[in-house]
Image (cartoon, one colour):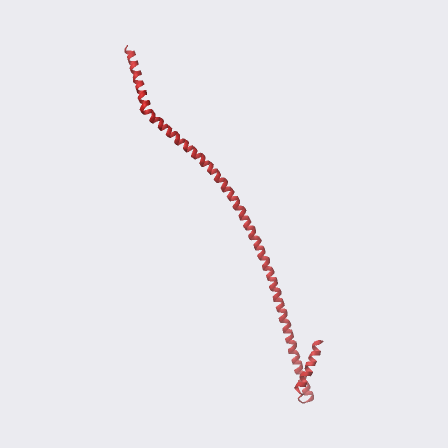
Length: 159
């Protein structure tokens, strides 16, 4: 009987142990396991959201980079067009300025030629008067000389 009483005592002790464990220890273990499971689930969900947000951010950054490249190409193209316009405008301005300077030079040359002709006419008239005075040996009337010289100059310049 000793064997049976021991077996019954062990069973009662085991049942008491299981009952006490289930009543006092088991809820704390279950709660700790549940908290751990919730924490792991939250971590996995956060990781999933992070991966999804990372994917979205990569797509967005790729899109923004593509747009930035397109905009940069447009800006460069506009700058090249503007540079070409400025160069053409500078060429046109240079051409106009060159033509203006050429006209001024031609005008200056014409004025200088006219002044040189007038000076030459005056010198020729002076030489003619001096020659005529020497030939005649006397002083000729200056007013009469001037009218004849003007007439002579008009005939010479029309030729």
